[in-house]
Length: 105
Image (cartoon, rainbow, N blue to C red; front, side):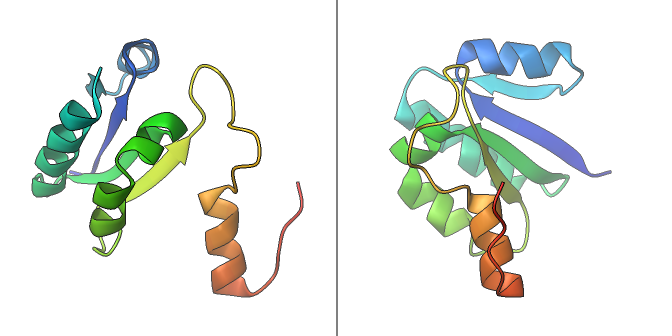
């Protein structure tokens, strides 16, 4: 059965855990986030991993490596502080690259 997981700071992970996502991990260090990402990648049931922009920036090399695979798909979301100014949304960049059209929101 397909599952979703979250790797974020403790507050965001707790929100998702309360919302029903059991595989929600609150991390304090980049090393901890890396280890959990690789463990989740080995779990064939996990097809989507949500992580915050801050963590994604800290473990960019791991996310780039995992993104070469078909599964899991990693989605980067804003943290509790809100979106990082000037950061390009990975989802909009993917649409532009795939469709060839830029979407303005």
